[in-house]
Length: 143
Image 1 (spheres, rainbow, N blue to C red):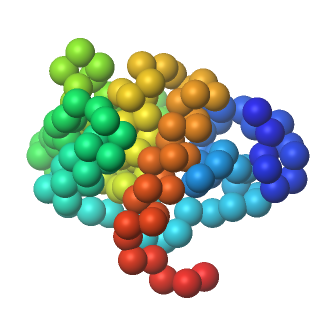
Image 2 (cartoon, one colour; image 1 turned 90 degrees about the vertical axis):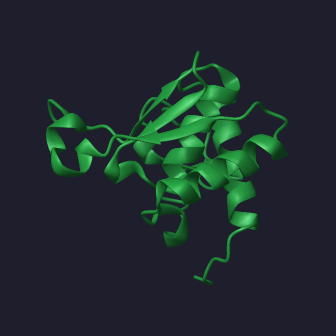
């Protein structure tokens, strides 16, 4: 898979270097709108999850939070990695940790649940489609 902007080969496992927005871009060619990366409440993210599931013909997904994680950062730090979220396929649930309570993280995890795949081209394309759906339905300030 290559960036449509510069043609550079994309490493899908380095998802922090990707911008999935309509298409799958490298961070050098595209950035997420700040509104997509703003922290949001779990109730709002659950509403977005319901809307996205409905729009994509998917079964409902439950969005969860661990309130203890707000007070204990060790619950979402493992070694030197900050966990933003976890997807539970059998329960169709997403657990969002405080740093990951964002629309980008929600769409990332929904793409895992919708495709049943890890960081594959199908997952990345689904993630990009979900972000585009959110962006098209969210008031975003012009650049």
